[in-house]
Image (cartoon, rainbow, N blue to C red; front, side):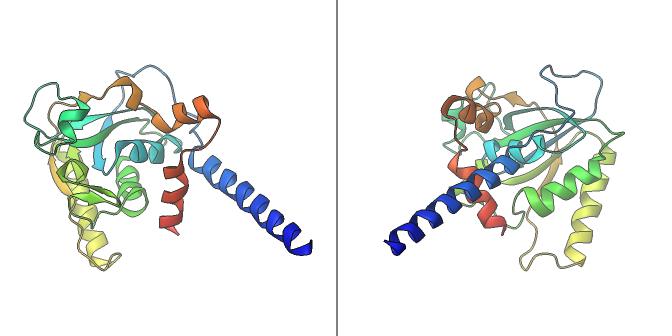
Length: 208
């Protein structure tokens, strides 16, 4: 009897912990809006599944708007099915519109390179493998390029990672917006099912 109660207690505690961890991962920043702004700077980044990467940034204050799509390829108007083959040259990417009075481009890149994903994995991110999941910074001007290069050099000098950072630094070209069901995928999943997506929980565990 006592063993059964103990197991029940452990299961309940694990469930509550899972919910709490997921809730923190799914928290939204206070500055988010639903319409894309036309007067703010943006960052374009790629690092694994764009569902995961988008959720990493929507929790930060100063982030005003995000969308996910495809960057860096050679096919016009690519579909998700085409990109997943790895043959279009695109990476799953995220556009981040931000308030520079609240968060700097350097701060965004620091989060990207030290917390949001693993920049030492070449053409993959955890279970997602292929060039479409590569790590990349698509810069929009020379200042963004300079900041990216300097930050990667600093992190390399600090030996933050055992393996070298393989993040590409490349000019931003056309950003093709992904299909609507990919936008804010984890948030839509929770609204539909009432549960956190398993990937949110698993990503938190990998970070630990």
